[in-house]
Amino acid sequence: MIAPAEARALLGRLRIAPRGAFRLRIDAPPGGGAGASTAARVALARAAALGAGRPAPVPETLARACVATEGASDPLMYPDPARLLWSSRTGHVLAMAPALPPLEILGGFLGPPRRTDPRDTDFPDIADLARAWPSATADAAALAALASESARRTLAHRGLPADPTEALGRGLGALGFAIAHTGSARALLFRPGRVPPGAAAALRAAGFAGVIRFRTGGRA
Image (cartoon, rainbow, N blue to C red):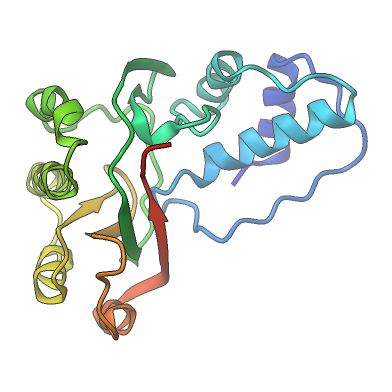
């Protein structure tokens, strides 16, 4: 997640003098594409600031420190990261979309971990999908279709081996599927309450590890 030298570099950039020892535990594998390394840095920075009697770093400052120490970052330091169009290599918010529609997610990790290489910028062009994202948030099916197209482009562009996620989703009645741009995370997107019995077992049978189910989205 984060080596001691990386932790010291992060806190040094934030000018936080840590007090005591910190132990982090996380249930997502490194290289899974679920933001484990960024989550570790955000947790450490906030805990160290609290221990030093200081306010937590503001998201923009923390994002810069994360990018400086790991080369790329997820926007997990922001209060609603699912709404952000994010530049992972520079740590900047490019745009903010409306709140996501309610969705139920069933996912896990498929295949070996793939650690993010910050020098890797070989990603498919999704500018058209980014433009369509704000209007797609009005409907769960439209948003799932957008996520599915993004996943297909990544799989095709990266030349990854045959991936069963989309076919699994069709068989289980999912609205669509999503994958990590780097990493082994995969997810099926359902309307809330529409995940069929046995769906988690079907993912495990297909080779998924760390299967998890949760809900996201919904307007305040």
